[in-house]
Image 1 (cartoon, each protein chain N blue to C red):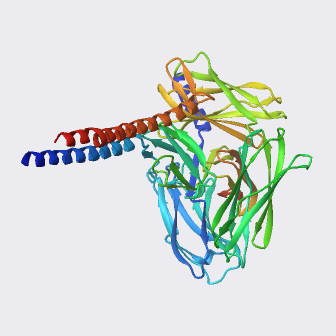
Image 2 (tube, helix red, strand yellow):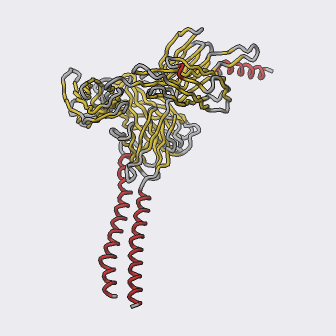
Image 3 (cartoon, chains in turn red, orange):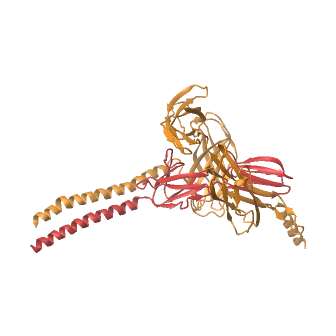
Amino acid sequence: MMKKKFQKRTLYFLDLFIVVGSLVVLLSTIGYVQPRVIGPLEDSLTNTSVLFSFTQEATLFIDDNPQFTSPEEISVRDKRIVHLNPGRYYWKVKGLHENVVHTLNIQSVVDLQLLHSHNEYNVVNAGNMPLDVAVYQNTTLVQKLVLNTGQNTTSSGELFTGRQHDS
Amino acid sequence: MTRNFTYLLAFCFLLLFITRVDAIGVTPGRLPVDFSPGLERTLGFTVLNSEHKELSIVLTVQGELNTSIALSENLFTMHASEESKQVQYTIKLPDQLKPGQHHADIVVLALPEKNKIDQAYVGAAIAVITELVVYVPYPGKYLEGELNVIGSDQNQETTFVLPLYNKGNLDIVRAKANIDIYSKLNEKVASFNTESISLKSTERGELVTKWKAAVPVGTYRAVATVIYDDQTFETERQFNVGNQVLELQQVNVKDFTLGDIAQLEMLVENKWSEPAIGAYAQTQIFDKEGKVMADFKSPTYDIQPLTKANLISYWDTGGVHIGTYDASVFLRFGQKSSQKDLQLKVSDHDITILGLGYVISEKKSSGTSSTMTILFIVIGVLVLLNIVWFLVIRKMLHRST
């Protein structure tokens, strides 16, 4: 009687071992095959080249709305730089955690540089948006320029004012 | 004595060519706010001292809503070590504003340097503007949108995306669009409808539909008629079928030694039926942190229709280490631009280009499935183990007891 009870208990123990062991192995494997996000860790950036990095190869979906109605699908092996214009983006990784949606806000930067060269200035758009530049001489507007990102031009004046170009 | 004089002359000559750089930045460049009567909110912006100079900053507010803004400070100094500075301001909007956009400009002025002798300002002043844009809903139903066309290769699916913004103060129950495609000769070649969506006041939504571009390569015009409740508006966009006007097919680097100037020969095909005048390649190479470490352009070329040309670029690899670098090649002509992301594997005497056409995409897809294969194998083994245990071994053990 005692032996039978002991054997039954052993069987139940083995049942439990098999079920729990199976679950542990299954969850560990899911964790292993699932790409984990290494970067970007911040959700607000000013750099338009965004480095996406994962522990595994991953397929990335990026869109400008959380419903992902027209997403860009990008394959990432380890890491990949994705160029995005300033704006708000939503991104997720294809796989089991597809419902985890991350946000990414790329801030527009208005950055104006003046390189003094003799009597003129080299005006550079060092920001990440096209710029409208107004040039003043003695408080009078003398020139209006439109500079694309990274573009430069020569001009002369006493005050240079840059603002985000109206698209 | 003569040598000293030569050094002095060279130094003076060098001074003549030294250029002084002044810079000021602000982020964000524009901040949108939805209107609500009497809205009070604290907002902020960041002033950037990208050249790491001692800056005297003056802040002023101008524009229609200038009286609605109160800055936390109007005058401050940024030290050379200070890369950025956060500035806060509060807005208090009036109870009523006309429908549409209303603006206020916050001007960030960097005063020019002062002469140490007479304290007079030397050089020009620079100012950057951060804009506050307040959107006031229109009375009733008011929908705005703009048609975008994505990826249009011949016989491939073309996606039409219509972001819609409900700028009215009433909800829109149903909005859908009819899209007509016209050829260059204004002949209608296709017509189709999108699904319909509903939009709450001030909400943004998207209408998306796909069309197989089974038409000859050329320029087309898509006209979208958006029908929302009892109103309509039209938006149109010109697009090309045969989207990849210039296609980067190959990159060759000959006789390369790390540290020297590498000559990159980019084989580019003009797949368009018209010449690509003034085409050039711009290459950006990124370091491990994703920052641009090199940015160079080729001279301009005229590429005849349906022909190939070698676009030559030069990359100074001085200071570059052995490794694999992400790069983006932009092929540009006129207003058109296409981008190709690739990797450069740099060794002592060789640069291997990864990601042109074949390697990356195929390996990626097989790689993703291999991880899933592992998961399926493990699930299979576990299911089998459980079946064998519960249906065979356990029964046998039970019987034997």
